[in-house]
Image (cartoon, rainbow, N blue to C red):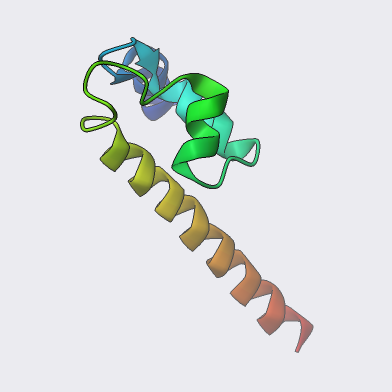
Length: 82
């Protein structure tokens, strides 16, 4: 079953200038893009007329969320091994 957040990600553009959908950004990060430049190379985001002034903050938040999630997972793994 598809969640409401997944539907929004499929429909909502993250890069208004180029019409790049949010789900493409999420997929790039899930596939290993760990900085704006890598997300940009994979998706084309940030190459529009605003030069990432609109989408850059959103990508930074998504990257920070991914990093925080990885840290939490590592912390749980360390505790479970102890």
